[in-house]
Picture 1 (cartoon, rainbow, N blue to C red):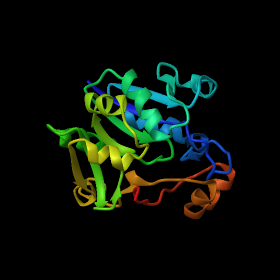
Picture 2 (tube, one colour):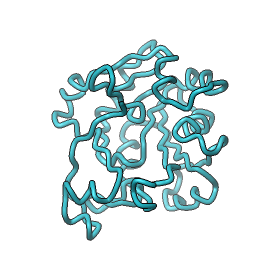
Picture 3 (spheres, rainbow, N blue to C red):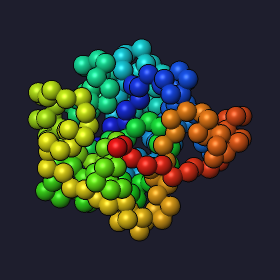
Amino acid sequence: MRSAIVLVGGAARRAGGREKYFFTFQGKTFIDRLIDTLQEAVDEIVVVARDPGQCERFCHLGDIRCIADIRRGLGPIGGLHAGAQAVHGEYVFVAACDMPCISPAVVRLLFDAIGDYDAAIPCWNADMLEPLHAVYRTSALLSYLEEHDSLSLRTMIRSINTRYVSVEKIREIDPDLMTFTNINKLEDLKMIDPSAEHGQDDACGSGQGTP
């Protein structure tokens, strides 16, 4: 069984307090696009919010479960902790909610790439990684997150048996690497499509990973 976690619990400071998962692209909100995409590649999706109140924002997703952070205020690490405890799959794809162009083919490639490793992480180079567009072995996440000192995703990745998947390999199925498009604020959307001001966003641009 393949699972997915979508992290939505950020405070949206760079988005001016607006909820990025409700930005629109090609007539759909980011969260709706993510769910539709992931349903092509996984058997189960869990949305992880910062608290029960935020979970109520996703009641329109029907059968998709939304759970709240167990350990509050820890950022993505807290979301991973809650999500890893909630999913049923041996492997889980983790996505940030501000990536509206994720490719199901790339998600499947990462699942296929993990093999005996604990994680399959896309990498641009040694310093630029995509930890929130990656596949993890659920048991490895649970083991690490049970007791850890750092809130850094990079520290976590280096503490488990990670396979780094070059973006050049991913480029074979996603030539423009659109899957890594990352929108931090509405202005980013307007730069690639001026119609975003009216909520009709029709283009994505390539982004890069976490240094």
